[in-house]
Image (cartoon, rainbow, N blue to C red):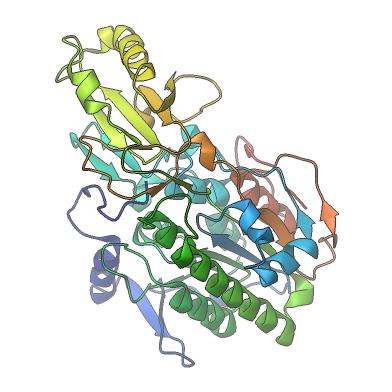
Amino acid sequence: MCEPSTPRRTDGQAPFDRGLGEIRAGRRTVLTAAASGLAFSTLAGLDPAVAAGPATRKRAYVLVVDGCRPEEIDSGLTPHLLALREGGVHHPRATSMPVMETIPNHTMMMTGVRPDRSGVPANAVYDRELGDVRTLDQPSDLRFPTVIERLNRRGLRTGTVLSKEYLYGIFGERATHRWEPFPIVPISGHAPDEFTMRATLDMVETFDPHLVFVNLGDVDRLGHTDLTGPTTLEVARRLALVNTDRLVGDFVAELKSSGRWEHSIVIVLADHSMDWSYPDRIVSLQGPLSEDPFLAGRFAIADNGGADLVYWTGPRAQRDKAVRRIRRIAADVPGVLKAWDRRADWLRLGPESGDVVVFCQAGWRFSDPDVFSNPIPGNHGHPATRAIPFFIGGGHRSVTPGKVSPRHARTTDVAPTVGAFFGLKPPRGGYDGRSRL
């Protein structure tokens, strides 16, 4: 759940505030782009040879239109995104991966592996060591090397322009250059797309990274807060789509005018889509599970909007019995789609996701620990929000104009695509995704 009220953090400090502390302590160096005065940071003492990079004109740009539904590209509101899609390689069968949330799918994009290998299964997890629910927003939470780091080791320049605080936090200092997002909107924890795209353009002009990873958060944030429900015109979200599309058009125009377009690929996708619920379509598992004498006081729930992660906190020897009871009780709660044993082969979420993963039906949302915990109508994380746009534009000869692929593309395919474009070998153990060029 990309909820305004973010779960507690391990150190009580937001990633942005922590980053400012690192800058003041001299662990990172801030550079200012003359064109706009926006702040970018790089590791202190970066080798000038790395900063210069090898002699290749190839460039890759990954633009994540956070929370976009695939049919919105055909809505008439996004002509620039539609032109990119129609002029490149389109994957109409594309999906995000469980749990269909922002943090895990962004990390899947940059690692090319599933959460059981990356350690990042959801936005919010119950931290057994901490004894509390927290957001996965620490650099150490991501345990698998990203294509960002692997390109760095090749001497290529990389950049991240991430609008959301927790993405800024988990990707840490992996990129050669990193935008220090500002201004951060209170409660939503993200920087508006106007500033994010300005930062992207300035990063490209000032540092010219070989890879730039961009999160545009407005469509998602405004989709979350449409209090009028799923059957309205969703005016705020539609306006966000129009504005974000305009900004993408500006970006493409800059690539073409600067001569970068013919050497570039532009991967456009979403991390998940969006589903809406009315106030009477709320699922809360805390009560039903607490009413069971065996489970009472011996479980924890990490609410992720369209998915609840349930953790057995009792004796390990009783885990299997607890899983069976949790699944049985959850399955009988109105609005629940399915309760899965986390160890189900297809989920591949890893131990961080707890013991039982519960998805809600379309048009419903989880709210735990009580019915007032999640007031926002727009949510994702459940299967109703799997479908995403996914297409590859750009002027590089590896992009086939007008191609429509019948293959099932996934968020895990981004890193393999970028890696193949730059000639990187797969990481140890291989990718879980595949190149889509």
